[in-house]
Image (cartoon, rainbow, N blue to C red):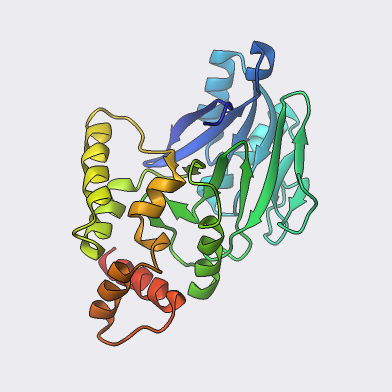
Amino acid sequence: MSKVKVTYIPAFDDNYIWFIHGLSEKHAQNQIIIVDPGDEIPVIETIEALNYTPQAIFITHHHGDHTAGVSALVKKYQLPVYGPANENIPQISNKLSQQQETPAIYFPLMGLTFNILDVPGHTKGHIAYFGHQLLFIGDTLFAGGCGRIFEGTAEQMHHSLSKLLQMDDSTLVYCAHEYTRDNLNFAQRVEPENLYLKQRIEDTQILRQNNQPTVPSSLQLEKQTNPFLRFEMDSVKLAAEAFAGHPLNTPAEVFKTIRYWKDTLD
């Protein structure tokens, strides 16, 4: 279990803006890193209401619902902006990629360190931030699903998601949207007999009925229920082949077919 406190601000219809708090003492916990601020107004309101001290902004990719609030926040708080080296985001002051030394980011006063994963597919230069058993994954992986492939390729997205399978099951996954119910409805089409999935659907319904977020999720739960991480499972392969109408020879082909299948329903 991570010792780092993370809080959220809802934005737009279904976005989450994350605040990563410093470790230990109250002073450090009032220091925050802002993740993917697509709207500055609720961020500023929360900072002022709770007396937070922003230290930096993390950006995962260039889409406006993740970046539109950056300029105003930088102007107001003079913050450094960390983001993908391979995307054109003018406000970035610290360009990051997976090739950098470990750890890539260090905040000594907050007691926080983060490494970078290159996870292209949704966009060409998408990155994720990983540290303290927390994974800020933007729109690459969702609770129960994955992002659409807008700029990259299915092969790139498959490779990006394969990296997550190597990570510890206890990792908490912080994605940027509340898409879980829709994602799990599709997952049930793929694996109708998955008992973990049936339980997750029930749990998700209860959370949403009580207006609670379904994020974060554990990586273990994603590995058990998310078809976009289960491309090596026989049950997912058989479902993908039934949809495609022909054999699929590799896990990458299974993933590509599952992604296309969901695209036809959205």
